Length: 184
Image 1: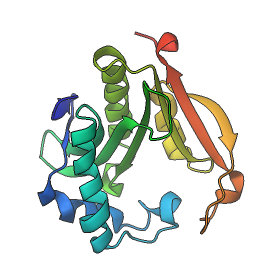
Image 2: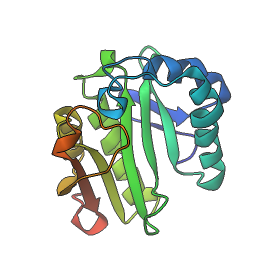
Image 3: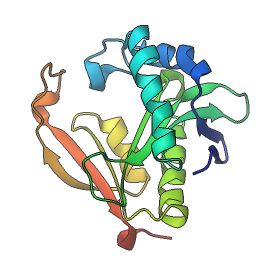
Image 4: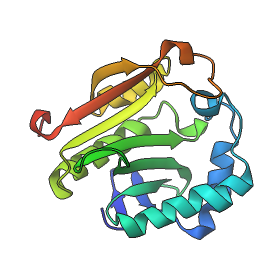
């Protein structure tokens, strides 16, 4: 992916240093952070000094991948982000899909639309061999998005989290789609 990708309703663009407030606002909603931190917001300092610099650095290392700001094309509203990047411990050609959207964007099909576009772009333009995504087993909304994006349940597994959030006892799930199994 170059610096942006468009869908019917979304513009997915690279983050810039000017996006700090958008990320802080997104990560400040306890419902958005429920399955990630148990609802604890990400401190502004962490966004400024760790998260955003990591996103920007990733563009230099992997120019076609990374975290992408999701903007509603009709009104220009920031909806959240999508992640489409090589997994640091994974084999070449394997890419992780992720998303985090503002509550106001939930249930409107944006997560599915953006995910489908990234999966399609990964297989058709970027030479990706496998796309995978993970979430908590109890995060049914995210699991539905993965299924609607064409990914299939691969496994349930358990992580040893230092501070497990409610529902962690049910484990994590991995969904994936291989290039060979993709429907055109």
